[in-house]
Each structure stands twice: as structure tokens, then as C-alpha cells.
Length: 428
Image (cartoon, rainbow, N blue to C red; front, top):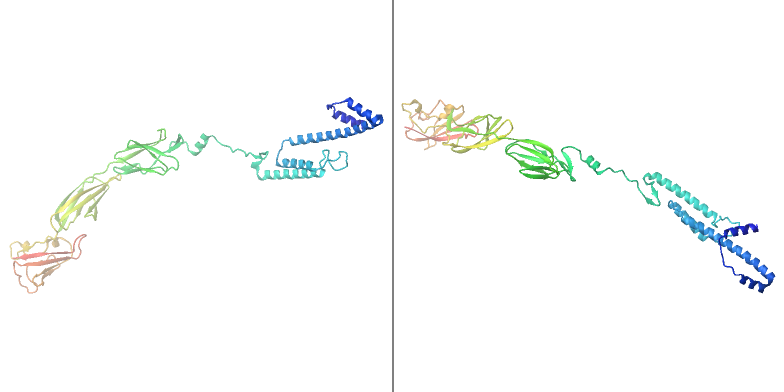
């Protein structure tokens, strides 16, 4: 066994060199004597062997620790285990290699290694559980999280998906343009066309009145034109992406003629007749009375000037309005005369009855009053029973050349007609 141990040291110290001084050994040998030198040599040899064994043990443990610490750390659990091993080595006193203690070949307690292995197993189980709960974090390496990159499409494909490839919606230089929405493509002369941008992202671009107009999302533009026109919507490069034709229909001519200061069937009449053939005719007299038809009649009962308005609409739905002024020369008073001759040769002038009452189909009450005493001289509700100048109370002829007051109450007046008429009458 001694030879085996020496061979082991010899092999371990094969490349080891130390300085040797023969004179030093001779001096020691001469002073101690041969027996002493032999004993000393034996002691030195034994001491040297144990020293070399200690150096070898330190070298092996140091190399092992160096290699262990230089090993690549795979995860956080392994780093923790390595720290525990180093701590155990530092805190464990040196043990005899050949002793019977429960140490491994590096002098580390077996119980510590077992605890480290249990901690490592628990760490591995914990990592596996984390992977199951968070499959997206499986690419964890050396404590750094490298999430899997999401798939991304080229910018062109993304823009194509967001912007339909249609002639009404195109992207140019980062801006999107679309065709506008018109309030109507058929209008009448003088009406406005409202152009709306109903898109939430794109702009609307077009040319109006020799100017380029750009509408942001949600904005609108009012366009007026007296003639039909083409409206082109373009993108940022001036390319047409939408076109429409706006038809502007001309207005009809709302012209008419009238005739005033005439009487028909005991009533004052103003006749109006429109030119042209239209879908509808709407007349307005005195700003409140409305009539319909190409030819209408109206009654003005008071003297003065009045506006007559005509509005017509053609087959295109276009409307036009014209206003003219009518002058009424006389106040309407039932066409009553102011004198009569009871004894005259003209039978039409021998009695008094307002002429309109003889022509109209109307209910009335005629009363003749003496202005001196306000007594009633005559009354009648029949157009055929006219006053002949006789006082109904006395049965005698009333004095001639005397002015009497007459009054007529209309029981069923026409619209806009006053119900009471009055005047004076004289007979000779």
C-alpha cells in the first residue's frame, strides 16, 4: 500500500519541480549523526508526503469549484443550487479524506447535497407549472423574457385591408380621398347643391368656381349654379375617383294678366289669367286669400292698391313667383245710386233698391231712416220690393230733395266682405 501511495504522489507530482541543495542535507546529517539523520529523513519524508497530499486535495477541490462556477447557468433554480453548494463548502470544516464521516469526495456534507437536489427538483416542477399556465412565456432563457413576435403583414397589405380598393376610396401619399355625397343631382335654377363628406377618415376633393375644395370628414359645401355641370371628385394626385352630372332645370315663367274695376252679378271682380301650362297655380290676394287655377277671380271691396302674387310649378318641380299690383278705383257699396225720381219717365229710376241686391243671391235687410228723428221710413228684405218714396207709417210721399239714410245688413256676406253697407238717397 505504501508503494501504491508513493506511485500516486509520483504521478501527481510528475511535472512538479523544486530546488535541491545537497550541501544543506550534508550539514544536517553531520550534526545529527547517521541514526538521527535516518530518523529525521523518515520524519521529513512522511511529513512531505502528507503535505503533498494536502496540496493535491486543495488543487483538486479548487479545480472542481473553478469548473463548477464556470459552468453555464441554465435557469434561476440552478443558480440558487450553485450558491447553496458554494455556501456549504465555505462553512464546512476540512475533513480527513479517509475519515468515516458522511462527506463526498470534495468534503461537502451529503445532507447538504440532498437538500440542494430537493430544491432543484422543486424549482424544475415550479418552472414546468409556470410554462403550463403561461405558454407564451416558454421561451425564457437565462432569466430574460423573449416573447414570441406576433406575425405582421407588410404595410401595403394592411392599408389594402383598411382601405377598400374601389374607385371611390383611394390612398395617395398617406391621405385617403373619397367621392362626396350630393343632396340632389337634379335641382332648379337658384337652388343649392349641398356636397357632404360622410366618410370618417377620407377627404373629399373637387373643383368648384375654378377653385379646389377639400372637405374634411363630416364637413359640407354649398354649391350654387345656374346651369348644368359635371362634378368630378379626385384624389391627391388629381385622378378622378368619382364623377356625377348635376342637372339644373330652368325656372318656369309665372306671368299673368288681370282686369280690375269690373262688376259681375252685382259684385266687384278682378280677373287674373296665367300664361303657360304648368302643374300647379297658386294665387295670393291681399297677402292672405289663396286661390288655385290658371284663371281666377277676386273681389276687392275697398278702394286702394293691392298685390297679386302667382306661384307656378312645372313638371320638374321647379317653382317661380311673380307679383303685380292691382289698383281699385271705387269702394264697393252694393252699386247703389244716390238719387231717384218717383214720378220720372224711366221706370228703372222710379224706385230705390241697391242694384247688387237685385243681382246677388243673398239675404239682407234694407232700412230707410229719416235723419231728423231717426224714424224708420221704409224697410224690406226682398229685392223686388223697392222704396218708392212713400212713408210706410203715414202712407204719404216723403218730402222731395231731402236726403235720407239707407242701411243694408248682409246676413250671409262673402269672405272678406263687410256685413253692413250704408249711404244717402234723395228723390225729387
